[in-house]
Each structure stands twice: as structure tokens, then as C-alpha cells.
Length: 229
Image 1 (cartoon, rainbow, N blue to C red):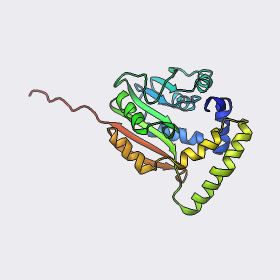
Image 2 (image 1 turned 180 degrees about the horizontal axis):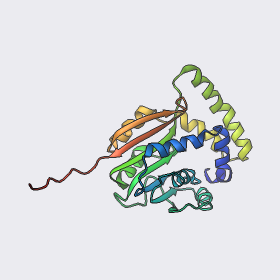
Image 3 (image 1 turned 90 degrees about the vertical axis):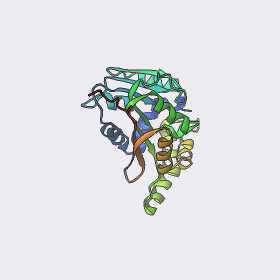
Image 4 (image 1 turned 120 degrees about the horizontal axis):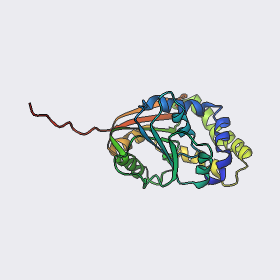
């Protein structure tokens, strides 16, 4: 399904979000508090738009690995290489990354597609160094009643039709999208899942009137070893 929409994926995202997708990526970069020595893993990287956002930031990670399980999506990413960036095919539930190997994990609009959310978050925790950060952005439902009604009308009816016309998709990807969002866990459940995976300092940051939410959390640092006087 994702391979079927790979060639038009970014164009549809930009048009359907009225350009807000670029702002959401900039917010991920800002909230990540990137350090020049960071080694970053972008899970479910798709066509590489998040990788390029971090690579083009004023302070960028030393190395970035983008990981996705859809080969044609990765083909779009590889076709636009970035300095210090690389891409690999892999499963978010079995990350092909060593324990404590990266200092920053990101995931944009991917966790709702995990077969098991807890397993995916546990894997992110496993590959992070102590003190490392995770930054996740995912769709959410606005809480204001009037905005929720307008949003659901657009999201359920207007956007899928528009996206199918632009992408000429016949895989059902843009029928799946609203269903996956509406059936996914709310922000408090995701906060709880991050805590259950071992993350601390979990921050929940709604953006664009609650249409998306950014989650920022840390893996606890190792206990400091006392020194002899």
C-alpha cells in the first residue's frame, strides 16, 4: 500500500495539509534539541522528509539513519541523498540497530501503523543511549467540538477523495488513513505507553489546534558512580 503511493506521497501530504506538514517537521527539529554529536535514527522514514529536515537544520546530527519497510518509499528517499545520511530497509518492531547505539530516535506519522505499539516503543528504548531522546509526531483529534466536526468532515470525506485524485491511488491507502487515525490511541494512552516502555520526562505537545501531537521523552541516564574522596 505504501509503495503504491510513494511517487506522489510528499506532494499529497503538502497539498492535503495546506503546507503545514513542513511546519510540523520544523517543530520536531526544534523540540529534539539536536546536538552536533547526535546519532539519529528515523523510524518509518518513508520518503525521507524528516531526515532532510534534520539534515538541513542549523544544528544537525552527525549521522542520520532512515529506516522503513517499504522499498519504493525508500527509493524516493535514496534518490535525494543528504550529507551524513543513509537509508535501510527494516522493521520497526525488530530494529536492525545495536543496543544503546543512537542518541536520538524520531518517528513521524508512523506509530499508528505499528502492529504492536508497545513492541515498537520498546525497540526505540532499546537502541537509545542512556539520556537519549525520542521525538514522535502523530495525528490526533481536536478536542474543541466545532473544530472536531469540521476536521472530521474534511478528514473522512474531502481529503481521501482529493488524495486519490492527485495520487491516482487504487490501493486504498487514503481510505485507510482516516480509519487508522480514528481507531488509534489518544494522547494520554500514548504517553502511558511511552512510560511503560521505560521512557521518562514524557511531554505531550499538541500543534495546529490539536490536529497533530508531538511526543518528546527521554531514556533515563545511568546512575552516576560515586568517586572516592
